[in-house]
Every structure is written in C-alpha cells, then in structure tokens.
Length: 239
Image (cartoon, rainbow, N blue to C red; front, side, top):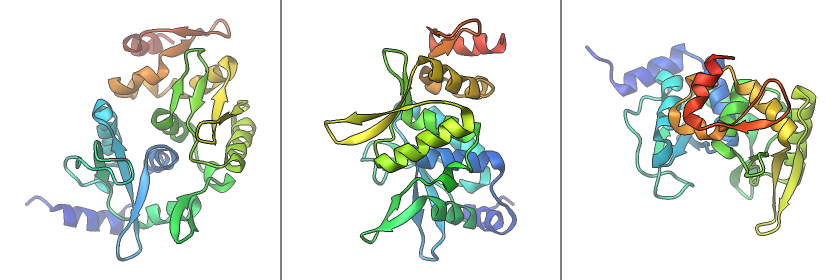
C-alpha cells in the first residue's frame, strides 16, 4: 500500500536529515529566490518559487530535495514573490529550523534575512552555484553580477570578504542609485574564477538555466568567450 504524503513527511522528520547536497541547495537558494515559512509547532520549512520559464529548474530542485518535498506539483502562488509563479513548499523539519537560526533575525517583529560569516562558512561550491543561478547573471560587458540588493552594505562587505578569503575571488560592490541598494560585481578575470568552481556541475543542470553560463571561458587565456547555451554541455564534456 502506498504511503500518504503525511506518512512520508512524518517518516522523513523522524529518520532523515538533509544530505550535504540537499543542505547546500537550501543554503544557496535562501540567499537567492528561496524563503522560509513557519508552522504552529515552530518548525520551519523552505519555499521555492520560480516563473514559468524556469519551471524545469524548479523541478530540478524538487528532485534533489527528495522526500523533504512531498508536494506533487507546484502551486500557482508565491508568497512574497507575486501572484505569477510556481511554488513548492518542503515539509517542516528541525534541519530547516536550524538553518533559519543562522540566517534570520527579528526586526520590528518580522523575520528578515541577515547574512553572517557563520552562514557563509557553511556554503560550498554547489551552494554558491545555486545562489548564482537564482540571483546571478552576466552583463553585456561579460562581468558577472549577483543581485545582493536585499542585503545591507555591511552584509555585502561580509560576502565580499568571504569570497576573497575562501576562493581568492575579488568583487566590487556597486551602488544602485535608483533604489539605494548594493550589489556585487565580478570583473572578467574573477568571473572566470567563479565559473571554474561550477564547471563540474554544469552538465547535470536543466537546459533552462544554462543561459546563466553562456559566457564560458577558454582554458588557454583569461578571456571569457560567448557560446550558445545549448553548446555548453558538449564543450564541458570535452574539458
């Protein structure tokens, strides 16, 4: 007899913890498009939301989370992200509650993300890539940018310092005068360094997200070269 979603969730809570890959997915997504919710028992869960053009990417996340996400199909509403989206919610679990304690602070009675060095030190290459796929992109000048606009200047400086000390990657903090926020920029050389961290994963990513990596690098020089995203897997397999 097939188990119900309630039974699967109960069994997962009692007998399972997040694998390293699952944890990294959550850590990276929470810095990007992900959020958290709370149930009456105080336990936390994770909400993942993407638009129709990234539904394959959302399903990729669902597959990695396994039994931590028992919802069969996404709902059409994303709390905090607007009406038009695709939303999955995980089960609640103590592991998510522990992550909440590392990232969120109470401000005026509301929970708000606040990036600390403790949180960043838990992130590895895979978690960083998820963050980039959620909130990063490549500008026309081939510089990579990550939309850290939701974080304060001090938080951006913490992220900047962590990237340098952890990976030897330099960034610039840019100011968006229109909304008075800050975001991270990587010059061409440091964009290349960032891409190198991700190359071992790219062949396993869904097609809809490959445009994020369209500026791949030539291993023989320090320039990024523009390839069509559909060619990336073929080229990666030859490296």
